[in-house]
Picture (spheres, rainbow, N blue to C red):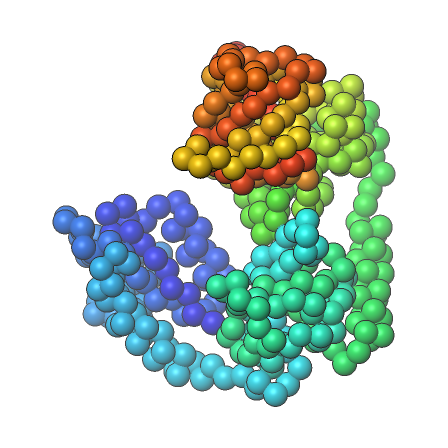
Length: 429
């Protein structure tokens, strides 16, 4: 209903600020600008106002209609005034909802949780959402089985403007989709199936059966310059942001097209799709399954893994331009599986492991993978063979290890040892 645009007083307008402004304007909602960090010396609020005036956000005192509030998240200065302006704006907009009606919510984020299944963060817009309610979102349906507030406490209901985390949907919801409460399970199933059928018909109507050879021929002839991408990420929100980021990189000469995006690790089906469509696969905070990685290597399908969106964006732009600078190439050295976990006072968590393949090296980086999703990336704090410190341990041997600044290691986790190599990039890479 209202956007609070937070701008750091010391940094000013950044690329992320411009992106947020575009989203707010496309939603056609009022914007209140909170200029943060005013407790820091040298902050020039007028400079921020001048920069934002270029985006048609003229302050009220300069004859415009944009409210600017100087605040400090650190000291609390200006926060009460900001809340007053939000309240005033909501009264002007006459923002009201009927708590007695069937609930309507919007999905803020969704993910798969190993223990809880499909988990959604939703914002209630109308009515009251209750435990046991039958719900529909996109082509998925279910019943609200668990509901928690922003502090993680279990609750039985949530009224208008409340944000809660719920479980019970049959699959992963799409960020931005609506969640509607319906009268019974039968109705929920009917609506879900109808939406699935409509989506399938649209997909079939838009699909074009082009072989990989045809695609290469068109590119060679100059009729088609298209970089096709399969996107896999750890959450539905990440998939949405990555898809939007990649497709916005399109130019008049090269089009970036995301042909498939989904939550979870990279599967063999993803590789098969990439082979059929001549696409590369981009993974964000996920890992390829063993079979998928093997098939990709055999068929020459490129899988690129990232944990920072801007690195992904820069990499794709470089590939599009054909000006490939020297690249950092990740070389996986080996994998270990956690067999036992010990909590040692003043030391932390120590994992008893077995090296499954390759080797694990004390001086190199590691990433902890759980259910094909990267949980943590960092360095080893220790590596031992029995009671002796070790520089590296090879395949088939047992070892004990601990990870710097990380203790949430569980039995069954996979730990991957890797190093980064600087190599000259080629057009074939």
